[in-house]
Image 1 (cartoon, one colour):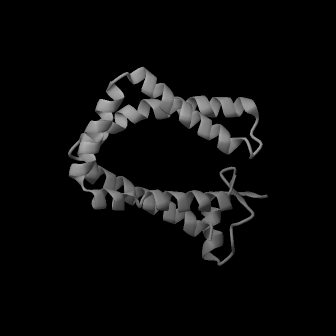
Image 2: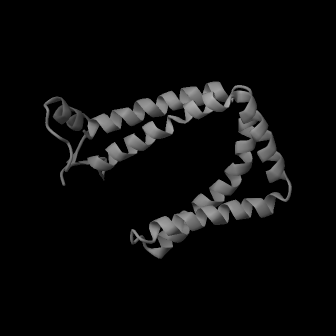
Length: 151
């Protein structure tokens, strides 16, 4: 596959030619489109914030922070273990080498364990819903952009 620049990809799209089958920044354009679809989907989290309401999210954040504060090392370990296991379950059928699985599982598992406590604190902030809406808008724009580029 030929590696093309970002501007070349948009030039092809504007000319009516598909950029599929080419690489953009070392990754096939089809994967950029898939990432775009995923980002657009994740940006829909704003709907959850609006449906649930900021008050309920704040109460949930308070409960999560209290839950994680009791025996934090044990609960962080369990969250990390579950996330690491999920990473291995997903990467094993793909044929990822075991050292990469180990590093991914350990890194993502540790990050998930640490972030689970921070999530509770973040949900309690009064400005969280507004920030969530802005982040969702950004994710939607970037996601739609790459999805459109891969079409």
